[in-house]
Image (cartoon, rainbow, N blue to C red; front, side, top):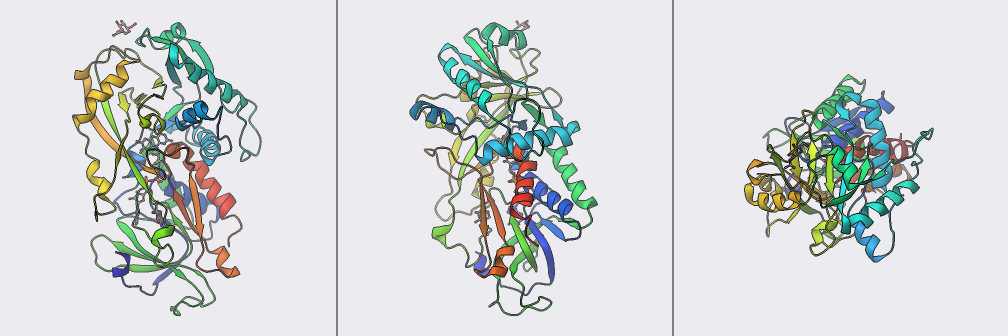
Length: 445
Ligand SMILES: Cc1cc2nc3c(=O)[nH]c(=O)nc-3n(C[C@H](O)[C@H](O)[C@H](O)COP(=O)(O)OP(=O)(O)OC[C@H]3O[C@@H](n4cnc5c(N)ncnc54)[C@H](O)[C@@H]3O)c2cc1C
Ligand SMILES: *[C@@H]1O[C@H](CO)[C@@H](O)[C@H](O)[C@H]1NC(C)=O
Ligand SMILES: *[C@@H]1O[C@H](CO)[C@@H](O)[C@H](O)[C@H]1NC(C)=O
């Protein structure tokens, strides 16, 4: 596909080019334009506006920390294993604090109950014990004077005082007061505004990056580009135009989420590319009995028996939006492209349907027995970008760096790709940006 696009000489040059206007690309572009106001930073997004893909199709939960169910399997098979030093843990805690501090109006600390039946009690107890030991990540200049993660074990009766419609089978719960919700669209609008208002930042919509080439010492001399410079030449196409423009950038950030098509020509041979797996998650909205006065997020314990899917998502939980509307989801369904199918094949799986409702109803009534099938309606679908398949264990966020060439000059011209930014990517977004800008680009000029 990429080779059909002719390599053109760049017509313009920028310092930083960010591809992808989801919450991650926006947060990075914002941090760059804040940290390097005298440099030019451009973000290109293929849709007509920001956040049309993963960033607008998720639970909008501010996770207090990452408690993947993968963890549960490790817990059973290898003793207590928890990756406290993973990016997912560190960036989630840091991102959570940054969100609450800076975007107070778009966030609400509603708190979460992880509810357990008698058999599931060991799970929440071990989560609680782990939470006690969790420290603040090093990214905090001054360590807050409170635990990094507050949790409290409740009895079934105490949990029912908070949420009266919980099943009588629920005999314990873990209360996580730091969990909350975020209005992801409002957050992205704030980030956009910061970029537009910055000195050197700019946003370009309806524009796709279609080809990436390293610009090296041996590249053909390009007009207006000093031959000693290294970097990247990115071909972009706006709207339906057949042929686009070429932009030279010193630093390239690939924040394309689910998109495999942005393959660097000659850079990533098939064998070196990271495979991407896709896991569909459906949501249903609910109005009906059995959720009276519900005011907290409610998560079941993961199912650890039988089906592998318990390890890959946090289970069909109850979330609330800012108006108090109740939503259940996401479930998990693995999807993959048919032979020779377009890498954007997943877009056709975005249409919600009622085939998931029965299973969802069954899952939900285990903890909220009064929820009726009739009150459930398909709402929307999100796709998780996964770096490991259904049988995979814990997988961290990946920050991959490539350079245009092997010489010293090229080392300050990185292409940074953000891979597998699934949950808790929204919570972590501001911290991901901070990590990229402070730890990965801080020394780059
Ligand atoms: C079902 C589900 C539930 C989730 N729940 C939560 C949650 O409750 N809490 C939480 O913290 N996280 C959650 N997440 C994770 C979170 O939503 C993601 O980590 C985050 O939104 C990823 O953002 P992104 O910017 O990387 O991707 P995206 O939002 O997909 O952004 C990528 C952008 O790149 C653009 N693009 C792609 N290719 C090109 C190209 N060639 N040229 C130009 N533009 C291009 C796309 O159009 C898109 O806008 C959930 C995810 C899913 C799927
Ligand atoms: C950009 O990221 C996507 C996945 O998000 C990946 O498939 C692709 O190979 C990356 N492209 C480059 C040039 O690194
Ligand atoms: C839900 O709780 C309310 C308030 O306590 C109660 O009136 C109602 O009967 C409960 N419904 C179910 C289905 O448990």
